Image (cartoon, rainbow, N blue to C red; front, side):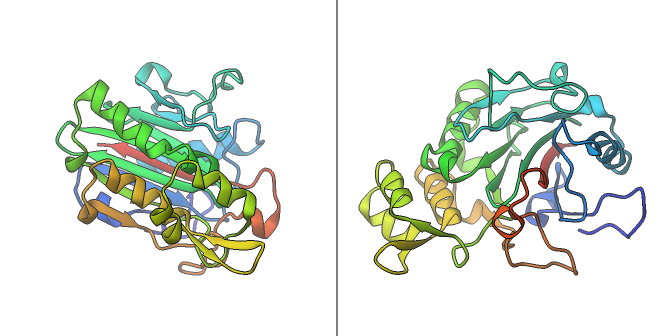
Length: 262
């Protein structure tokens, strides 16, 4: 859901299928506000403005330290401000966040990679995951599900999962090297759903389908998997575009994706 244009408002949209449960709040930003990393000059101002809209402070937010790993970290209120008020430890990267704390905003950033939102309304646990092609090959969504099960007793059949904006299957052209990477973690039948040959050397890669297959094979019900249906490379929603590294080649412009339990 887009907020009205105003100098102090962050333009964001929500995953309606999750938000309508009444238990959580989700968001993804557009290319209008792109500074969300600690080292970005405007990032703290952006987080402050977002906090005003959500009724929270910077100590009620946690951001992941992303290096395309399959590491998912359990966070609590003690982690509030990580990656926002203070720099994250470079030696301990993690691309996913899980919590059972309420009013704690879990944040990741993307620019073509896949954001994955998890919500277990039974155990009241949420997770926010950054799944680029490397994280998707490593099945970071599976790692997240297993950690939610082992730490909080969550059942995959109870989970609601949403796949946020990312580069779509029609835009993501890749080479034989990525096909080989995926062939080491996905079976042949799945590969035919994930890759479409374009010519002898190139493929179109469907990251969303790879994530979806991983979710299904780990017990998430098909009816509980949702998609924003937005491509970061070519889509516009209500006049707003989204951050895409393939389009801009920017090393700093990123889309914030986040989830919070109320």
